[in-house]
Image 1: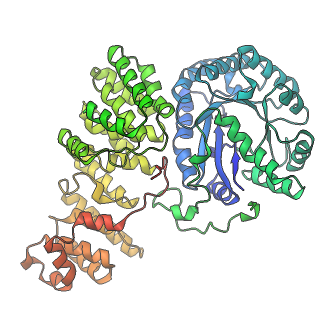
Image 2 (image 1 turned 120 degrees about the horizontal axis):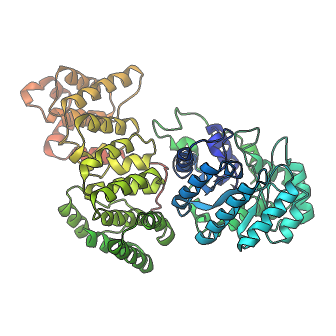
Length: 301
Length: 299
């Protein structure tokens, strides 16, 4: 089975992760722009970060036979540094219409401040102008109200909920998100947020329509294999393969496919490529390491 | 040049995409503004098919080479061609606007955009001001970006100083790129490069590794005792293609200077001297796989 992990921060991950993801069947990934743990102090570092997302990270992924896409945006945490935020807003138009940019994201609320709302609104307008989907980060603190407030702002701007993927949902938020017509994504973290087992329960209750599973793997404790692992658990628990494929592949493809920048044929010729076959001298894949056997246990045939 | 490129694009891409591009060219000619130009340059990806190779006739390729020697669109996709057409139009702006816009584009370019920008360099004005950007682009480890400058592009041979040229050729060897596709390779041979190739060979041999046989093409005209000894090593320890490379170098020497080597290279030397064996043929026979990189083009 092929997977599309629609939320993973590969700039923080190693080549081991890429190898394992490729071996486990991850065909494509979407890397949202986010903060990097250490707050940035200069707009230029945002530019270089965006350049990495449309440049070197795309290349790095391709060496493992994985197609890399991204969403571009000003994250809510750093929206609170208004001087910086203004400069980043100036940069965004240069990136959002590039090839492989499948949305504006991740944007939304963190502390739910006035500045955060301002930049959520401005970026929602940008998405409207560029006709791009939006990837929403919902806050960790006061999540339920933050999620409702996010949807209120988006609807106020005139955004179609069908073009918005709301991420980091849990049992408390999913119902309203689905009822209002949004895509509901779930982040599977090993210790926090949502484990694989809770995800299985949510699927049983709500079905698979407009539900998406992602890893959101980043620089913290997280699991770049969360999507294939959750899929394996779902299979074990009797969820049909069709449903599993829907939430780990078809739904994110349909949601972000609205950008016109991602389609299945992009990876029909690369998925499942043996990374060892791509060895290219002085590049990422140094030395002739054996990768064929890695992590095939998570592959579903 | 523009009409020629647009003709080729017409034959390679859907009409509505080409119409869009012509409208935008008209707009930029009438009233150039940077921001819309950035959008159009990126926006090529929203109007043209993603994986469409450029279809140029032999006549068109010959005409391109006449207008700009060594310049070709072979192996390009329509994204690259459409962007090169936009850059050619940008080249008609005044110098500061042109250079500032090129720098800004490079500053925020994705992989395929970078490749398009470097591919356009041979047909852009103010070449001297672009050299540094091309040298910097070669520092990329992204194969497509490196290739867009080093292979099938006459800009480096025309404008690089010897140190930058030598670095480019050596890096091409390091990352296993086909040297026969470097424009001006023979014309830009020099003693320092020949010596560097020899050093590199010794390094590789000490490590029990080999050097791509095309490397020795850079040593023609600079065969001293060291290189002659290297050729002897190739003959004794190399594979069939190494022997061919040695024969091609030996064939370039006066027969009386190379008697011992000539004696060791019977059939290969005959092929080299008859013209049956050439550097380009040898390079093509290696069929180096570009593998996957930033923007794979489907056949």
